[in-house]
Amino acid sequence: SISLPAYHVGRTALEAGDVTHLHLFENRYKALIRRVIDGNRLFLFSGGAPRRGDAATIALVERCSILNGGKADVICRGVERVTIAEVWADDEIPGLCCARCTSAIAAPLVMGRRPL
Image (tube, rainbow, N blue to C red; front, top):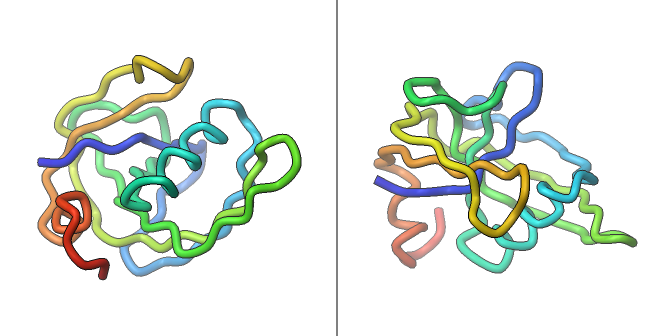
């Protein structure tokens, strides 16, 4: 299983293979994108507040532009549809959730192997 920070919106979740543009301006998501681009470029994209048993999509950041004030324009691609196994509040970033899920496709990226 892998653990990733979670981005959630009140709309349909990203599907595997879909590409979307995000404009991140909330403090929790500005911190999320900095963590993600400094790491494996993966995060969990959920259509609502993530909960155990919910479906979500692992997303890969393909492009990211950091703007004034830490806002970010992001292009990401859905990599894999997964089921959330566990959710918790991030210890460092107020309002940010993290989640654990089982992944067949994205796991090698988290383990530091060659990107997709």
